Each structure stands twice: as C-alpha cells, then as structure tokens.
Length: 267
Image (cartoon, rainbow, N blue to C red):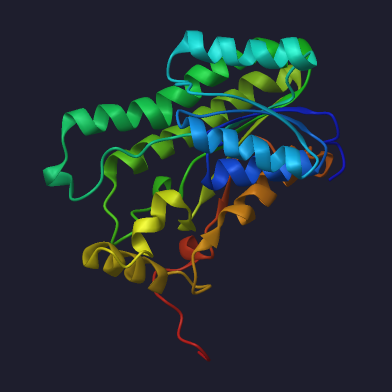
C-alpha cells in the first residue's frame, strides 16, 4: 500500500483478533509496528508471526494503557527505536458490561468506560506530542456498530455509549490535529469473528449460540466479518490513498446499518 513503507505504527491490543490482524497487515506493507497487550504469551506469538512473515515488530507486554505513565513509556519506545511515530491505532478495549440495562452495575459501567473510552484518550494524549513533532500522522480508533445503534439481541448500553464517545473524541482530534496535518478517523466494525465473539460460534452455551444466530440473521451479507477485513480498512486509511479522509467514522458492518430488517433473497 503506497505510503506505508518504514512508517512507525503503534497498535494496542495485538495479542489476537483485530489487533493481531492489523499488526500482520501493516507489517506486510512495510510499516514498523509496535504492539502491546495485557496478555503476554499471545502478544509474543503475534510478534513471532509478524517476524516469520518478514515484517518488523516489537511489543511491550503486559501493558495497561489506561495508565498515562504506561502509555508514555510505550510511545517513548517507538521514538527511541525508530525516531518518531506516524500512526496510532487505538484498537484495544474491554467490554465489561453487557446484558439488560436493568441488571447492569455501576462497577461494570465504570470499567467499560475506563477501557473503551478513557484508554484511547490516555494513549492519544501520550502519543500526541510525537505526531505534532512529526508534522503529520493518523489517530485511528476502534469504535463499533453499537455506537450507532443497539445491535439486538445484544444489549450493551455501556459499550454503545463509550463507542459513541470514541467517535466524538475522533471528531475533536481531527479538528485540533488539522493544523499539524494530523488526521483522526474511527472504524466501526459490525459483528466480527474474533476471540471476543468466539462464544457465539463455539456451541458450548445455548444462549450465546442463539445470540450469534440472531445477530447474523440481521446482517444483510449473511455472515459476520473477519478480523482481516477490518485490518485491510485500517491499512487503507493509513495510506496516501486516504489522505483526504478525516474526522469521520467508517462503518464496516456488512450492511447492518443500511436497513432495519433482514432482506429476503430475490426481493
């Protein structure tokens, strides 16, 4: 992809799922990737996979980016290793609150806000000076279809609220970053097959399986997405080909947001 060779890309949450797919995709295009995660063995496996594929990657683990000092240390590694930062991909998150609103707790709400909204804010705060010094850059953040609508039969009030917040933060960052040639974009995946959603496909729990079937039935394309499909969008958005895309959210949801019912074949 034009414009990614030797770019320094920081990706949070690279132990698996969309983060691992992104690390592999960016490294494939010649970027130098710095990852991190709280899961040590899985994060190290991602580094091994990238390296064996011929890419360049370092990773810091275990690392909790909701702490500003940790985030600053992470950014400093990239600067000391490669001289600057070009892309921050706020991929990591942790949905702690789900189920009916009436059964939700303040504790779960607070944890969801911490790891899905405060964490990308904190990480961006740590990386911001390096992007300003570079005179260009991209802040890419993972939002969600849940930030646009309630993705029934899932019930995720806190998740939806935080992801809507990520989209709002993205718009503010785009406005403040433009004088420095810093873009900010969020990606809103729909239902994606990943370790996080594995419970829907494992068949181990009847209720989870029913939820997975119910959600899939409302996807016009008739299937969940793959982590690699999100990673390819991220790679494009970081490339020169997307240089005029800024301050917006990119929905990658198989068409869920385009209709309020499941299309019937042939109609």
